[in-house]
Image 1 (cartoon, rainbow over the protein chains, first blue to last red):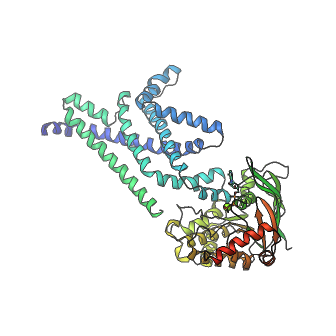
Image 2 (cartoon, rainbow over the protein chains, first blue to last red):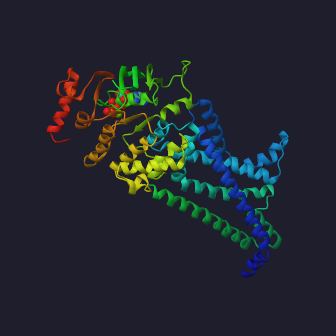
Image 3 (cartoon, each protein chain N blue to C red):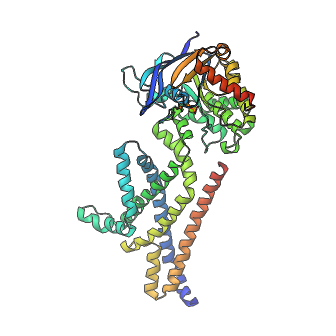
Length: 218
Length: 259
Ligand SMILES: Nc1ncnc2c1ncn2[C@@H]1O[C@H](COP(=O)(O)OP(=O)(O)OP(=O)(O)O)[C@@H](O)[C@H]1O
Ligand SMILES: [Mg+2]
């Protein structure tokens, strides 16, 4: 067994580049999905039925599709409509639009339980709609939804493992290459698990620092 | 009357079948403190919210310094930008304070002047610090609203409204969410504003304050402006039976030691 881990160690360059790719994919998708989510949330809450309806269809649609299927559609399905992306672009796009829907839904849930008066004060003080959302509504949402948004980011890290099926050299992909090359499945996969765990710890550290900011204001 | 600041002309508002305001008219001159009194559900909050168009009146007009609120010169309903410009001229103080929880006290005061009025940040900051000193909260400038007492929150609420340099201040029951022992510190600030000649419309159940600080009272009942006049006359010799009953109930409360 020690010997197996020795083999994994000898492949550390491969594993680390997989880890780096997973970290990059996750961080990029988390940031962009959150930004898109922030834009989608006011659409979900819009008083214009057409806008809120369209946003609702998109969000519910995404939430009902298994992520793997979405990745298949973007990478293998779209080319038959003449839209072709490379595997990195497809993988990132799938992660982003999928999770933007979740982020928007999380923020909407936090919004509906916010007290109404501070928002109304924003209107009374002359904030226009966009500024009202950006300066008055959104910051408390991000603070109160911090832990749930963090969970979703952990979900992004895990979803990124599916992208091994479109040959993105991320962490799971690297671990499977090592195990198939050297027949050390346990050592290879357990090492990957610990590396995923490390990423989640980083996210949790981020969540708890947001939590401290929120706590000071509660 | 001094120069007219607010002119409410025949405002009506209904929610479905409920007529909340019926043809309410009144005027407020510069430097006046008008206290709006009336039983619960008589439409006091709705009236205030119509003045800055948080609610859209169904009929009637509102003029601030001679310019119509909510309707453009062409007779159309105002867009966001025009409404926003007018709303910055009207400060509002809320029953439950409505401070912005993610901002410090000082940031709460500076937010609208800097973000909406686009005034110079350093100048706004100096003015905000002076306002905090005026309401006695200089040492709380870096605290978050959640860490303040109710009375302190409401004094911040008042300073925040003043930071916009409004022509008119609206108060919706500013002390009714406060513990009795905290009411006084807020009323002191409001009394000072009245004395300094701020133009104010104040919905309140504090009869003592109204009697003492108001230049005029407006009594609302079932959405109608039933009586308006000087506080001396209203409190000592109300014209209508409804006002008499209303005042008797408060006198009863006072005798019972509730207020
Ligand atoms: N958004 C709304 N939709 C339907 N009805 C409403 C709405 N807002 C107020 N009302 C009704 O309008 C009437 C007047 O309400 P308003 O809040 O203006 O009274 P108020 O005089 O401020 O009462 P209080 O002293 O309890 O604050 C009430 O009957 C209330 O139920
Ligand atoms: Mg009210």
